[in-house]
Image 1: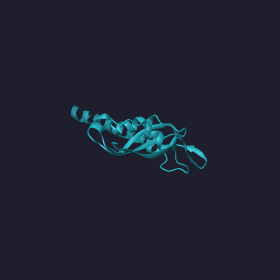
Image 2 (image 1 turned 90 degrees about the vertical axis):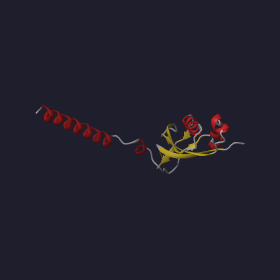
Image 3 (image 1 turned 60 degrees about the horizontal axis):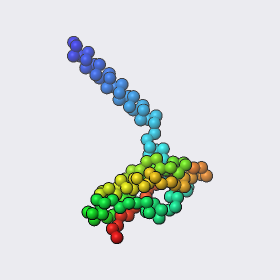
Image 4 (image 1 turned 180 degrees about the vertical axis):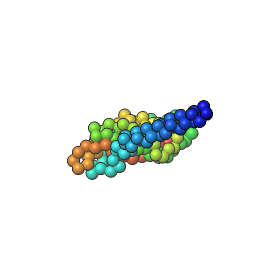
Length: 132
């Protein structure tokens, strides 16, 4: 008798958690849903890619291990031009991914615009690491 009551309690608790999780996920849009994939005017790095590249410090581990290639990152740019998050899409490792994240988080963009209004936009950036 106690086992049935306990199992009923667990079932009810599980159902409550499942329903509250479902309700929360529907009421709060994910980060990807809050940012447009395309806008009439896409965000632009202030100073251009040249300024971004100047800020990159080739990681010692990557240089010593001759790691080269392109890191592709998704930057989430808000309507003020600030980077709120960076996700690596294609990694090369060796500390290069972390360096791209560091530099993008410290960067400022000219905000994207859609129909004349500043909007949140996600944009893809590629950074090439090549030992000279």
